[in-house]
Length: 90
Image (cartoon, rainbow, N blue to C red):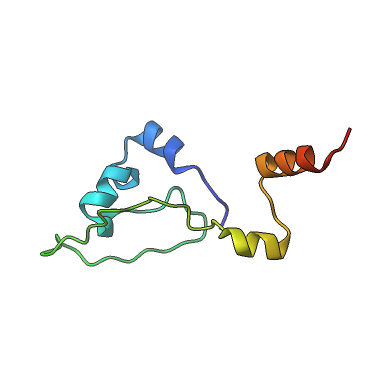
């Protein structure tokens, strides 16, 4: 699937299903933005019990913990600059 920006689509179409507040209210009605090769099937009707996420999107799902980051050799740019400054003995 090709990544599309949900924020741009939400602004353009005013789609409620793309809003973060809608995920907090009932995440079963949320959807992804402009999918290219994705089929989503839902039952008709309204949920009797909404599925909420009170702490939704409080962290980035792809984030690596610091120990694993060191193992794989990945450092964000800001940490690379700081480390280079500490190691430089000009």
